[in-house]
Structure formats: structure tokens, C-alpha cells
Amino acid sequence: MIMMRTLIEPVVAGAQVASSFYDTALLFVVKDYYNRTATSLNTSHSVTLQKAISNFYIIHNLILGFTPLLSAYILAKIGDNNRRKVTICVPLLGYFLSRCFLLLVIFLDWPIEVMFGSAALNGLTGWFTTYWAGVMAWAAVGSTEKRRSFKFIVIELVYGLSGCVGSLASGHIFVSFTITHNTGAILVICSVSLYLICLLYSIFILKEPYNETALRKNSGDGMDEQEVNNGNLPEPNERSNLLGETNEPLGGLPALTPSKFFIALLFATAIVYNISVDGAMDVLSLFLIKEPLKFSPTYIGYANAAGYFIFITSFLGVWIFSRCLKDVTLIIMGILSFCAGIFIMASVRWTFLYFIARAVMMFSLIPMPTIRSVLSKHIQGSSYGKVFVVLQLSLAITGIVTSVLFNEIYQATLTSFDGTCFIISGILSILSLIPISVAAFKYSSIFHRTGGA
Image (cartoon, rainbow, N blue to C red; front, side):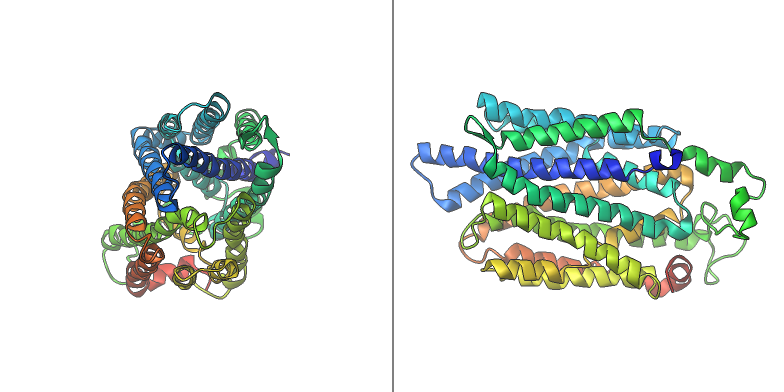
């Protein structure tokens, strides 16, 4: 029973269903608001509407991206000091409170700019930057090094399955259930309720896995009794070669030399790849609700579900191929999968072609959890939270610039070729192959030790 209470997966599942509900509701509340504004101005041109929605998301995402810089690292340091619940509970509290703002817009007809205040509150409480770093740190502490890649992709699977279910349900709930013509209200109420349940579960039921890992630390040879009986020897982790605290250098080089460079290469791959993915996803919703696709709320739910289904196929990819492929090969395979799919997305003009593009992206979620897994095997356990939040902050900061640039490019190319952003995204994903290839070439022994082959 205690082991079940240490699982972070129920929180991830509930929060992601809530997020799926909220994202669908926000998109169509914003669209409805600007549609009414455009009508009152006698200018209902679709390009004007698209630009208004795009500008809203630029400001909204800027606020969400910048405000966690004030709190994320502090929360991560507190989490690393044996208070890992802080990095889970504080962001969940922020999600719960900030999501309530949308109800004010729906029921009281407040201006949509209120949602900028919602984004600020969400960011100040850590937002996804702190929350996901906390989830990854929690998973790292509660898993062995040998099983960590699998543990991370299982969490991604739970995240994806929950998003898929939430997205499928969100479109139908949005269309079918209303409160006195307040479209989307039921969806937001469901979202807020789920966040509250997740917050209460995290505070009162979730148990930190620290005590279980502490048993291994306090034992004389670094292993608990079961590991000794099974004859399992401890694998190099916190004191690995990358920390420069072993007598045996890698590849004949001083141990400290490859450490920083290797980790920098992993960061570079993660950042560039994340830019390519975020840039495409930032404009994808806008792309889907305009001509020629013009998806309804129900079809937006299907489209989002198709995106989340990739978590399932990525999980299956790691589960099957990790037995015979190294970590670096899995990362490259995932990048190439996204690259091929996003180039197809650039030419989507029919609904079926959108789902084909999504199918080609089936392994595109593999790179990020695999990179985090490799990183976690070469840093001290007491630094998991800080390192993961630094990575997440790096992704968030670059994501801010990405969001602005891609939205501006999308607006500029609306009347010429609206798939331009997807072409740029594909090129960036190709560029992300460079640092991981260099890492694979220079430090193949590391990947051999941490990978599956």
C-alpha cells in the first residue's frame, strides 16, 4: 500500500485530463470573444480573427514563460532538500486558482485580458516548468538507474493516455453541455475540479519515495538487503565518471573534461528539438480552425487526441527497441520521426492527411524523456530537482522566443503559404541531430553503458 502511495502517475493522469479540458475551452472561448469583437467592428474576416487569436496567445505565452523564472529554481532547491512535494503541490495550487479566472470570463463576461492575470499567477507558482521537473525528479528518486528510462517513458505514457482521453471527451462536453448559453463552462468546471482533486491527493495521500532510496544510501555497501540477496551490484550513478569522481577516466581523457561538454550536448539537443516541436505546436491549433480544415470543437478534440496518441506509440517504441538499441539511437529515431511528420503537416489540406502526419510522428516523444534519463544517470541524486528545473527553464525561455517568432511568421505567411512554420520546424529538428551525433561519436562508451545495447 505504501508503494502505491509513492506513485506519481495518478497525479499526472488527473492533471493532464484537467489540462486537456482547459486547453480546448480556452481556445474556443478566445475564438468566440474575438469573433464577437470582430462582428461588432463589422470586420469578420478570417485573417483578422486568426491574427487576434494569435496575438492573444503570444502575450499569454510570454507571461507564462517569463514568470516561472522568479520562482522555479527556488522551488526546485526546496524540493531537493527532502521536500519534493513542494514542486508538485505549489504548481497544482497555481493551476487550480488560475484556471478559475476563465470562469469569470464566461459567467461574468469579463474581458479576455483577464487571462493574462491568470497566466501570471500560474507562472509565479511554478507552472509546468516546476511541475514537470518535480515529476521527473520524483520518478528519478523512486527508480533504479537500470529502469529509469523505462520509468520516464511510462510517465510520458500516462501523460499521453490521459491527454488523449481528455481531448476526446473535451470536444463532446464543450458542444453537448452548456449552462444558460455559457459555452465551455462545464468543461472549465470539470477542469478546475480535477485540479483540486489532484492537489488534495498530493497533499494528503501521496508519499515521498525518499525513505525507500534512503535505505540504499544508509546500507553499508550502498545496497538494500533484497539487492544483496539477489546478487545485484550497484551501477555507477551519483559518483559516475561524468562527475569526475572516479579513478577511471573515459576514453583516456580527464574525467572532468567530457562531463560539462557531454551534458552541454544533451542540453543543446533537447533545446533545439524542443524549439522545433514547440514552434509547430504553437501554431497548429490556429492552423486547424481556419480554412480549409476549419475543425469544430469535436474535431479539435480528435486532433488533440491524435497528438496524445503519440505518447502511446513512443512508449511502445522505447519498450520494444530499448532492448536492442542504445539511448542515442532511440533519440535520433524519435527526431527523424517528428521531422518526417512535420514536413507532411506543411502540406495538409484535407482532414485525413492531418492524421497521416500525426501517424508518421509516432516516435517523436521518445527524445525528451530519454535525454532526461541519460542526464539523471550522470548527476547526483540530491541535484535532480535543480538540474531538471534548469533544463525546463532553458526550454521555457527558448520557448518564449519560439512562440513569438513562430506566431509572427504564421501571421506573415497566412495569405501566402501557411505551412511555412512547419517547414522551419522540420529544418530545426534536423539541426538538433548535430549535437546528439557529436555526443554519440565522442562518448560512445557512455551511451553503451546507459543504453540498451
